[in-house]
Length: 265
Ligand code: IPD
Ligand code: CA
Ligand code: CA
Image (cartoon, rainbow, N blue to C red; front, side, top):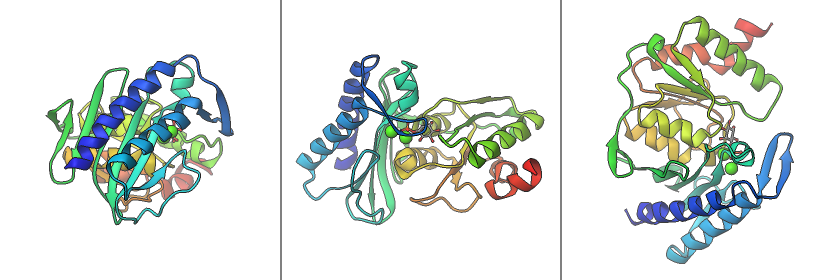
């Protein structure tokens, strides 16, 4: 669809622009440990200007937007101009641009561009998921014990972090193969879609972090739920994604509402 073609081209341009700024950007704090750089704000503007030129009716829900349109708008672009800002600020080469297109609360297509690896993940609802034009699919791992799991920590240093650590400990006790923390939710989801990770969870995310990634996982044959295992919707707070083969078991292990009783108190 023409929206996906446009998103791909614009994400690649924005990714190249962001990469060019790595190592020399002004950084400011949005919140504790929540950084914003000139690259975030300039890339956001660049993406929206390019989209509006091609699709004048566009509505926007971007991380760096001062005002955001409703998530159930028609012709809505959900944008994270730089996912992995903390990595980017420290010149760690794991960050990306994420652009999704939704109508009335359903994501119809999206892409994630990783400029460091020149990897473009794209998906259209009902049309499969692709990495640089080649069809991708989730892993076949049949059990959690064989799983390479990715985890994300929100910036919070309170309950969200404690529960995340409790779940990480529980997964290690289950003797899963390994846990990684990449620092970019859109890359985490893209890597579940292409089979580098078997599963991923994070307890607090915003729509711009996952709009494109959730479609990638679904179109690659995986499953995604919210942090309590409910059906995932645009607006869900956290995400639990997997290749689908051990999804219920994974959800039961990391389910947000059960973690406190089991481990913290
Ligand atoms: C963050 C990254 C990180 C995740 C945070 C997000 P940002 O996005 O995706 O991996 O753990 O929850 O907020 O701030 O770099 O766009
Ligand atoms: Ca983000
Ligand atoms: Ca961001």
